[in-house]
Length: 88
Image (cartoon, rainbow, N blue to C red; front, side):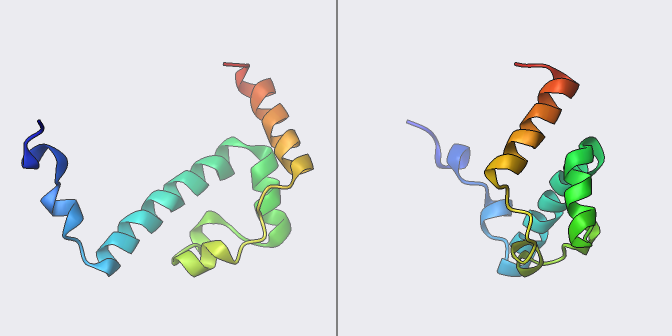
């Protein structure tokens, strides 16, 4: 059986709601910056809606972005990735 210390991270699990959101938003921004810089397709989608990853400072900002993938957009993004990186 695992020791309590093995499954409980006091530093992370005792964060305030604001601290937790700050960490999550920072991680999201890193991810959005990566896809913005690494994919011309995704960069164009951001530009088309008039946004950048730096515009995201709260979850409500992220939720309000109309960039949810549609089937066609998903296919184009996938094809771009396959062309750039090859299949796995």
